Amino acid sequence: MTMTDNTVDYIAAADNSSEGNGIADEKYFATSDNTEQQEKHNISTNDSILEALNISKRFGDTIALKNVTLRLRRGTVHSLLGENGAGKSTLVKCIMGYYQPDEGQITVAGQEAEISRPQQAALAGIGMVYQHFTVIDNMTVLENIVLARPIIPRWVNWRNEAELITNKLKDLPFSFDLKQKVSSLSAGEKQKLEITKQLLLDTKILILDEPTSVLTPQEADFVLTELKRMANKLGLTVLMITHKFREVMQYSDDVTVLRKGQFVGSCSVTKTTPLLLSEMMMGEKMTVKPLQRKAWPNVSNKSFSVEKLSINNDRGLLAVKNIDLTVLAGEIVGIAGISGNGQSELVSGISGQRAIKSGSLAVDGKPFSPTRKNLQAAKVFCLPEEPLRNACVPNLSVAENMALRNFDLTSMSSGFGILSFSKIIQQAKSLILKFNVKTPSAFEPIGNLSGGNIQRAVLARELSNSVDVLIVANPCFGLDFSSIAYIRQQIMLARNDGAAVLLVSEDLEEVMQMSDRFFVMSNGEFIMESTPENADLVSIGQAMAGHMQRNAPRGEHNYEQAT
Ligand SMILES: Nc1ncnc2c1ncn2[C@@H]1O[C@H](COP(=O)(O)OP(=O)(O)OP(=O)(O)O)[C@@H](O)[C@H]1O
Image 1: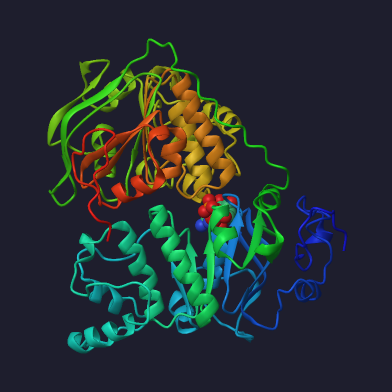
Image 2 (image 1 turned 180 degrees about the vertical axis):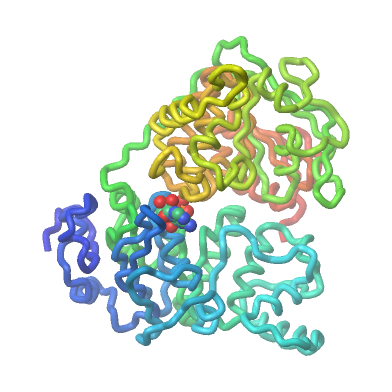
């Protein structure tokens, strides 16, 4: 086994090293004897609770997984790392029975497991918490818990169920009022309910897809501490897809890295560092350029403002309550907050996707109505959250999606109002190159791209013209660190070029890093305004969790006692 001095003891995948696939690197791929290496480096194969062995999966021409092996030790937290498109979701979907691997084998507790449906995974003791909530808002906590079972009885004795579940909850870390409607839970509570649903199913192997993305920093620490305790003390096994090195280093026992659909390495976290992990993910040393924030740019671009704005949610209830906001040209104004506090209604309202109940918008001081035509004329662009759902047509090609903003302009016509497909393809090819979108071709349906590449494609479309106002919502949700660095860089460049940028984000770190000033939004209102230099994470976390009195004077934080 060849190791450089500063290289952690990576464990090699069975056969990858000999295939000359472009990933193999001596320091990561040292031997073909996987078992021997694992035992040598203290990741004993004897206590494996789940093994996904030599898994391959192809979608048409795309090789999503090639000969990937993952071993989970009983009673550990195991992180699965990889760039966007590395194959993490495909691997866990193969384990959960959503996909059938083309090759390979899954074993649970040493026995080969036939998992062709998620229900079979549940019966084998494997449960998953997805990146987006699966709880049903209109039902109670109790109803959601019972409905999560793989087999639901025709007749449910709700009184007995309530008693049974109340008793079981005493042994679990999160508590709930079983009669409470899920719609009234915060995002953090919903996430705890998703985890609890699985734990109550007697799940032995819990798979989590970016479990902390909707949590405040304090909630994230609490949830991960509890899961690690349950793993190390009670024998639960946790597999966590994450892009956050802090979570890997602080809360995981082992880590496996995938790159371009292939196994790169697996080791105990005590034997690695974030730098080495990033190198394993990227296949090269990553140098993330620090964000270059220009001193207030001297620009003549337009500002964006809203006055006394109120917007209803889908149920007709007031979600945005009478807010005032001005974003000047050349500044990034952040809006921090836990999801479900009016941010998505705000973004959809000001970008013309939802009716405004009352109040007004202005660009450069002039009244503004966000119709498609006006957005184009005023150079207002938007990167909404979940771009696949909110800014794309999944079955249309990457090229067609990239042309959604300008297909009806004369510049994209071949004359007589006829669409020019060659111009659409030409535009896409140049944007794919410029924004480094990884896609088999411009003709690929955009829905087949990985999350990060969909995000890049939409950003490419929105930033391809000169921008006066840019509205972005959770731009880096679910992205790997290099895509995050890239997208933040692009947003900062737009600001430096004079765009007025409104950045709505549930990622506090992002708001603090990017904003010139920011608000915290809770229950439809701005309850705090500050600059990143003048605020601390703990106070903002408390404000986000709603433990701050509304309408506190600027810069003064009046907290109710945190519960
Ligand atoms: N249903 C599908 N049809 C076609 N291609 C797919 C499909 N699902 C995934 N892929 C492709 O397989 C590869 C792996 O995707 P996957 O979603 O597993 O990556 P990931 O590591 O989970 O990425 P992300 O972090 O962005 O979620 C990507 O190239 C993706 O475009």
